[in-house]
Image (cartoon, rainbow, N blue to C red):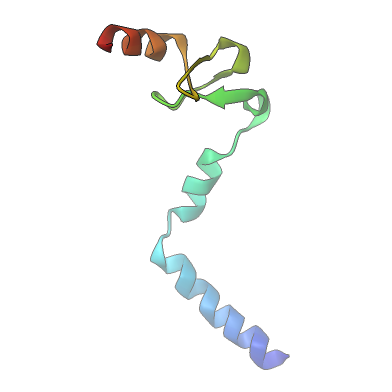
Length: 73
């Protein structure tokens, strides 16, 4: 068992050096506090309460991004 533990300890720093900002990126994707009951706009990536989002083509947009899409069409 000691050999396995040593190999895992050696491997862990190696994995972390591949992408040192990986943990920060992952934690940034998680909702915190009041954001738990909200959904991200596909276009601007900001969080909004689900009731404020508009569905277009199976994707959810905030009112500002939805109006931009309407203007483009």
